[in-house]
Length: 80
Image (cartoon, rainbow, N blue to C red; front, side):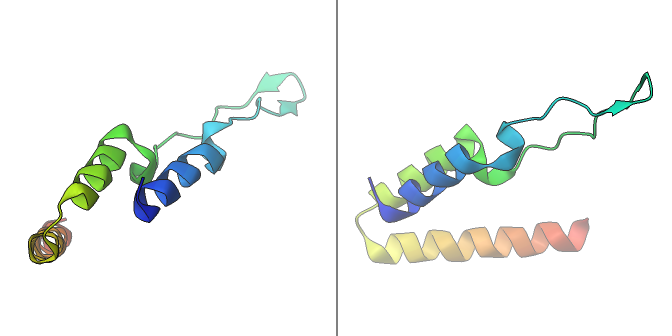
């Protein structure tokens, strides 16, 4: 396993949102739980992408993919 994949797996295991605490008591009225938005860094798809990325042996191909992902991310940020 590569270092990057190992780090992501460690994050997935230690992520605080993976252990939701029971809602606090508020004088008999149940509070609405906060909305849950999963961290995109701990999804199965992210881990699969990281593993696939590190399986690419050609450093030039990995670098070009990184540049492509960076460009896509920048374009997505401009749209939203």
